[in-house]
Every structure is written in C-alpha cells, then in structure tokens.
Amino acid sequence: MKVADNMAVSIHYTLTNDEGEVIDSSVGNAPLMYLHGNGNIISGLEQALHGKATGEQFTVRIPAEDAYGEFMEDRLQVIAREMFEGIDVIEVGMQFHADVSEGPGVVTIVAIDGDDITIDGNHPLAGVPLTFDVEIIEVRPASPDELNHGHVHGEGCQH
Ligand code: ZN
Image (cartoon, helix red, strand yellow):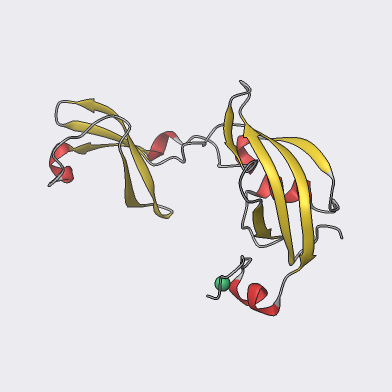
C-alpha cells in the first residue's frame, strides 16, 4: 500500500544533524506509527513520505523551517530569579514546562547572570536541518476510531 492521507503508517527512522550525529532513532525499538495527513509528524517528513510504498527506504534532508522551525531570537527572554520561587538550584540546561506565546511548551535556561535568568522558548531542534533515514514498515487504512481521534492506536490502546 502507498502512503496517503488517513493511512496508518509505521516507519523506522534514524535522525541525524548536518554533523552526522544521531539525534534520535527508532531502530531497535518499536517502529514509529502515525496517522498520515494529520500533522502528527513534522511537515517536511510527512511530505517526503507521501506516495511512498511499504518496504521503501529513502533519505531526506529537511530544512529547519519544515522541521522544528527557525530559531527565533524573540523567544529568548530574560526573567528575574524570583520567578523561580521554590526551586533551590537553578542551572543552565534546566528545562521547564511553561505557557509560551504559542501555547504550552518547554523552555530551557540558557544563561544565568546574577538574578537575571535567560530562558529560551525555542524547540531544542529549532534552526537545525534534519536528515532522516527512513524505512516504511507498514501502511494500512486507519480505523474509524483512529480517524476520529486524529492519531493511531497501538496494541492494547483503547482510548
Ligand atoms: Zn485515541
């Protein structure tokens, strides 16, 4: 079967950056299952998969704008240490869930200067072009339940 809208697709993938470092991989784990055409995965990868068939393997390099977006300077923000009330140790690299301009997201502390804490609301992979090595494991029509929910149900998943 071919990848098309509203198909449940299983893939194995290995994700690398331009330096060839592996960022993420499904190999050795269960394949990634997603509902095609519903924005479940990054848009560049969804476009690359469209029309491909079970068993196909390919490599695609996706520019940042079609992956996790460009790095936005205005998502860097300096806030006062007192905003971190109740947290004993504040260190560069700590991540928090926070309400950012585009809804709930993760912010990372990127700099500390006295009581000025700089946080970054960009996705950790913002501004990074991503290369995916992909193998299509299975393509099947999604069930009515899956279409209603907008995502694929794995084994034993009844929600
Ligand atoms: Zn569901």
